[in-house]
Amino acid sequence: MMQDPIGIPACFSSGEKLTDDAATVTRSGQTVFMSVYRTKIADQCRLITVAWCKNLLLHGLSVSVEGPDGESQYTCKVELKPWYFWRKHGSKRFVAEGKPIDIFWDLKAAKFNGETEPSSEYYVAVVCDEEIVLLLGDLKIDAYMKTGCRPALIDPILVSKKEHIFEMEIRIDGHLVIHVKHLQWKFRGNESIHVNKVRVEVYWDVHDWLFSPGLRHALFIFKPTLSSISTSSSLTSTPLSSQTGSSGSIEGFNATGSSEFCLFFYAWKVG
Image 1 (cartoon, rainbow, N blue to C red):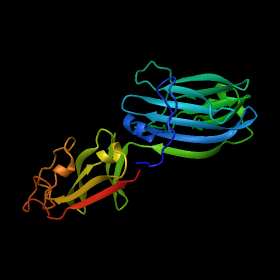
Image 2: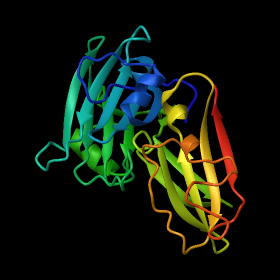
Image 3: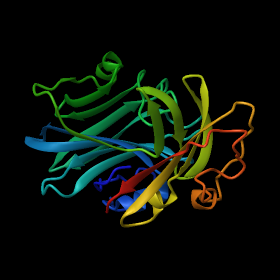
Image 4: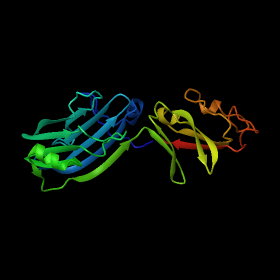
């Protein structure tokens, strides 16, 4: 859960203002991977922001070029529609101080592997003055052939990279044991894991951590139990506070079916 607000591009809408409100992004449930590069465009050093955005319904790419005043932006937005006939490759042109800037993309065979940002088989290129000033992806030869342009004399510099992810991972001794995607809809739940051949029930409640302002905490409970005890019930609607009793055990467990030990882990969010 990121504490610093980050600028989230409006990938899926036309005419919306860019927002720095992290709470708005939290409510939207939008995962964002954003990279900012500095390079020379139209005889000036400018920032190019490339953002991949995804939520349960939509998936998109946004490429923005900094304007002359450092605040305005020229933006190209590409919506990755799920149906087969949408254009998975194309280009868009806008003019900055009288010079055309072209954005080319080819995502026909892009491999996302369930992630927001593609890992291979794609390219995104920014062209100005017959030079590719920024080229992302592994299909570089395809990009040069499509644009007919040469590489820029100045390599772009990666200035920053920001991620806003609605997922949760729990690792034990460096090994991934729980990975929860779309946390904004799965803010309460439980899963079984095994540690040193012992079954452990893991419960989490991160509702206040995600949706409430100020000093808030998420609650994680780790409860060793016998494998013969069924604990498949979900906690998607009932807070953990109502699931814990005065003895420190979880409702439905007893001394004959599970250990008396129960670890309560509180993770705090400030701000």
